[in-house]
Image 1 (cartoon, rainbow, N blue to C red):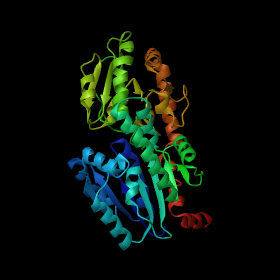
Image 2 (image 1 turned 180 degrees about the vertical axis):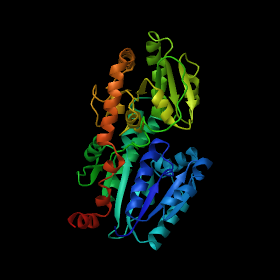
Image 3 (image 1 turned 135 degrees about the vertical axis):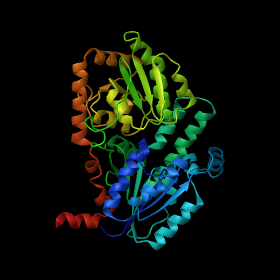
Image 4 (image 1 turned 45 degrees about the horizontal axis):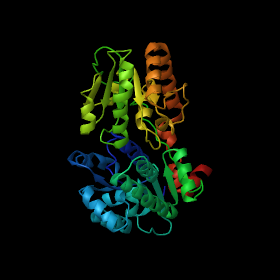
Length: 408
């Protein structure tokens, strides 16, 4: 391919140990196969800063900055500037300077911005430099949904964010060569909202690392005791995850335990909020916090659950559980972006009563649960290898070179 790539991320794309990092890490790996990559990104904490040296093996140059702007300052700045609060939260003059310097000194021929809050770091680009905006999710729609379901000051803030962020997303998409979303459903929603066609707004689906998330892979087992084990995995300071486990622990789990008194629900993921930690006091609920390897918990699960009520795009937690050949019970929102059929590859349950009924039925029929898990794994192998989901990336960034390679 001709020229270098500038890749901008709101969180350091290394290692692939949480949802947004999984996608950005595999994007970085694929980009590095195409051309030298210069990465500008933020780190949330000292742990993230510590990964910069390891990531350097994949990059031609990099700028990793500690994100130090408080939500209060970002909020006041965003309100004063009539700016999206999400965009205001991710701002740093040093990254603007590094981007300008990199564009001036390196032979950049393509820019990839990952998530809406990184788009404002992309200046007007010279002719011949491609701009791929990977929105991932249709974020403004998420904030609009938060605002519509509640009342009070936070509801007003979320409604405002939905409106202002949508305007920003439209402006960014108008100057990007291609805007990408994690699923065709998300892409279609944005095409309708922006007026852009399928030549400008596309889906780049998430994949799953099938060699890693494989029930036959080597990983430490989890000693989970006796009785049915239900597992949820995810970043536990992320609002949709918090709301999902709270609903499941308080409404669905008691119904299951009325028939299976020794059933337990493991909430597996780092940074559990106080609301999540409190769930550990409920009968049968276990809050693990961060674990060295989520695969042990997935392998131990009788059923993996994904009861998200607000979800955008493709849920990595569902792909990983299916790749591990586990039976999954997911909400319609969590299953929406995944190319899998209800009752064939996973089970879809719309509310706590349906969740409890379908989980109890699986616990009563281990053969069906095992068959559902095998079908889930086969579906992941058919559709969700990263090499397949990112196959179109070269043509998006370097269309002329890709066309010549295809004609050769």
